[in-house]
Length: 147
Image 1 (cartoon, rainbow, N blue to C red):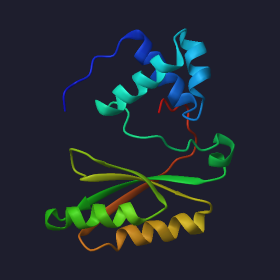
Image 2 (image 1 turned 90 degrees about the vertical axis):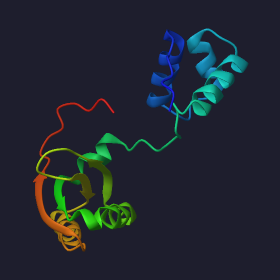
Image 3 (image 1 turned 45 degrees about the horizontal axis):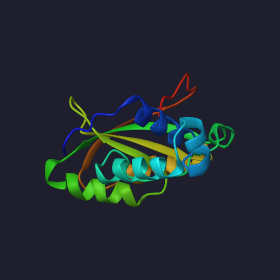
């Protein structure tokens, strides 16, 4: 993918969309000091160039505080990596998945409402064919999150 260079207005538009992807084009245009058409064209260009991949739901931090979050490091037999990734993607409790370098192959962010639920999720992850080892860390406090 070609690396898109963003100007200051593009960067500001992206920040506004990260804050509220459902904000109206008219409101975005007022905040950016440009026309609605200009905002629509910028959004379409950023989508076409692959900068904006899609729009998603941002969960309420108060609701998230009631959830148990865990980082799960996985060591996976290389023959099963694709199958493990596919299986993790189908699990609603897996909020994110990263491939990493080092002693682990994958790191997953698991989220569940209770410790019993997170325990079941961790058991399910650990029992996937090809997963040879897991190590979990329960997140106690989020100091900041720039996502």
